[in-house]
Amino acid sequence: EKVKARKEAEDRAGGPAPTSVVATPTALPGLPANLESSLQAAQKQGATGLKNWLKLYHPYVSDPRLAAIELDYIVLISSSNPQEARQLFAAVKQRTPTNSPVFPRIRQLEKTYQ
Image (cartoon, rainbow, N blue to C red; front, side):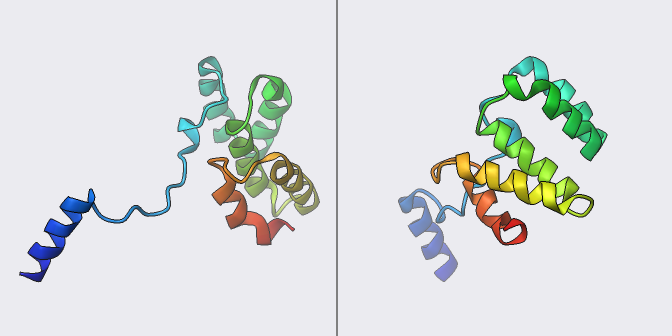
């Protein structure tokens, strides 16, 4: 009976309380569709592939997708090159507004890369 009452209350309220929404990186704007396949190939190559991809296509990609890709790269290089990871994280954090869809991820990684 309690479950039924709770279910009815959720239905009236429009469903259960929303959990924190983290944007799916591929759904973020800022990456031209024609670069999607090359990005996926670079991600499969790991840190080196992603670094080369960023060097080549950085001018064509914009935030928030650029920030998400750079955060992926930061995580990949954190053990092999922690200094570069911290520097790049600081740059991404500085240019990312608090209302950006990638800001929750920045908050999550902040303690690691300060």
